[in-house]
Structures are given as C-alpha cells and as structure tokens.
Image 1 (cartoon, rainbow, N blue to C red):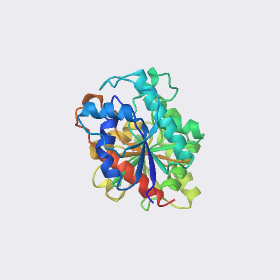
Image 2: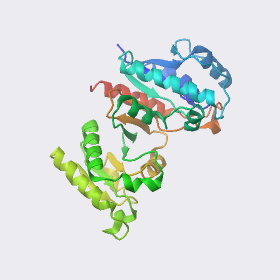
Image 3: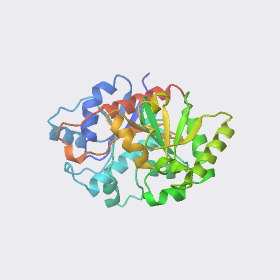
Image 4: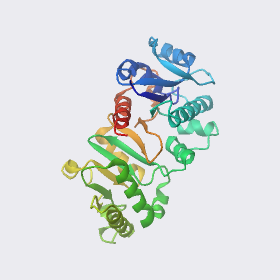
Length: 307
C-alpha cells in the first residue's frame, strides 16, 4: 500500500499550484498525495496555466476561496496557505497521512494575514514544543542551520556552548551520517585564533562536548567558512553545520539550487519542503522547476521506510 503524503498547497499567488499540478502524475507512482486545498482553487490555477487538472487529484477541503493574483502579496492568499499548512500538519500528526510535504508560502503574506509565525518551521516548533532543526540540501550535501531567520547582528549572542552542543547531538541522532560533520566558524578565517573574534572558542568547546556525549568524533571544526564548500574540502562530506542562514544557504544554493530540499528534524512528524520561495516573478508563466518538489517527496517516502 502506498504511503499517504499530505501536500500543503502554499501561496496560490506563487508557483506552488503549477508544481503540484504538473508533478501529480509522477508522484502518484510513489505515493498517494492528498492536497490541502479545494477543487475550485485548483481549477482556477489550472485555467490560469492553460492546463487540464488531473481528475484523480484527491483534496482535503480548505475553505476561503479568493481570486488568484499571480505574483501579488495577498492577505487572503497568506491566510489560505496557513489554513492549508495547519490542517496538513494535524492530518500528519494524527496518522491520517504518513508525512508532510510543503509547497512555498510567502512570509509577508502571512504577516498581512496577522499570522503570528515567521514561517513553517517557526509554527512547527511552537505547535510541538520541540527544537526543530532546519536542514537543507540534497544527497550530495546537506547543511544544517544553527540559527535561521534572525538578524545577523543577533547571531553572535546565540552562540553558546550548551545550546550548540545540544544542537549538534540532536542533529547526529536525527541523521546518523557515516561521514564526519564539519562545523563552520562564525568569523572570517574562523577567527584566526582570536584575531578576528573569539566565538570560535565557544564553538570548539561545543564540538568537544558533543563528541564526548556521543562517544565518537563525528564533529570537527571550527572550519574556515570560505573554504568549506570548495570541491576538494567537501568531497568526503555529506553534512555541514552553518552558524547562520546565509553562511550556509548562499553557497548551497549556488551549488544545488534546483535539487535541494528543506527537512525539519527533531519533530514528531516527518516534514520536507521545497528549498525555494514562491517565485512571484514567474508565477503562472509555466516556467517553474519541480525538481526540488519531486526530491522532497522522494526523501519523505524513503525515510518513512526507515521508521
């Protein structure tokens, strides 16, 4: 029996609907997708795209129909995407669905709709009262983010030995990689032994403490950030820990933008997502790339088998 995968539809003013409709015939070979939207909204999206809606797209009804406005930030679209996501989470947590795959939302639209969360992961943390870890990438390389959607000036204050050690131990237990995991320094040249900053002392201690707690030398560093993503350095790596969002994601997306996915670790549900935004600039122009979505679905299905 094929696993049931919940698909939250994302912001319908973006590329999510195009990706879902065009990918349906492919992903139904691997799973039973359940789309959290309604047929009226899917028909409207299909009409805008000049596509025929697959007749076997099974939906879980989400109320709140509105007129799709391609590429526009909209309160109604933001609210709808949140309803879709929230219901998909509960269906997954209750066991009706086996895993959750999310299509992209627009954070500004959520703000316009007075939704008190910065995004998917922020909601999941608060819903389940768990320190969810955001890990992005593909089979070639995954990057886990110690800090995520916070101003850059706040990052140094977040780097504390106990907190980073806990993060590292949890990451290892959730991923169990066979190869060592590189932990990036915060400062240029990883601080140059205190010349350019001393946060690396904290990172070093956290690495030692995590390895001791795990009884294995799985983590190493702090690694100089500007060499970590070079071909020679990462040839024997599958995972890197970045101290902040752009430190890890700028090089990752330069390398594997179309292939990468977003995985939420340390949660009671399995959730994956596309690793891209709503792409308002190409919405409803039939230009969206669905590789990340297909990979997100495949990752979810393959990891269900391990549970």
